[in-house]
Image (cartoon, rainbow, N blue to C red; front, side, top):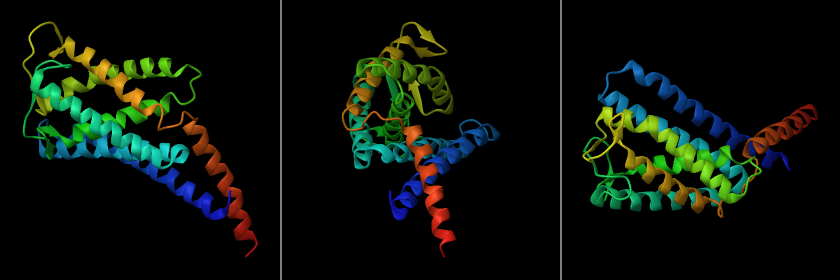
Length: 224
């Protein structure tokens, strides 16, 4: 790897890490503000967008432009699912997005589509070192994403981002049918990423690129 290429890789690594730390800082700051306020709403944008940039950047090291393509496909597909879901109740149950999260597209907040792409790429990366088959990774990943929503959904309802009107059994105010919808949708989203994003050890690639860059930089400095 040339020095310029190594520096380019290291820049992407730093971008991914910085974006992730930015998102974590926004998460830590969230409880400092009152529920339902504008500050927490902007922090929600920061968390989702920060982790989105971190995930896409990490996958870029392995898959380059295919990582952006995969993120775009998931955003479009998830937006379509959310449009159908908010209008028909399938597959999540009956719910409604208010006017808090802006902008919207076809009545669905754009941030929701970004969040779907973010969590899909994050989970995809988490399973990069798994020796399981693609089917196994998709199922385990979908379970992980659904588990994330068990925590997420009550928080978002509490912020007023969406409301539920679905009758039937519920957990913490969230209809159980919603989790079935999340699992099904997550399976589809993860399946869509299996081809465009190569399954490679992303974390190992980051560590290796940083390790290989340092000697090259030091060598260049010492020869000047």
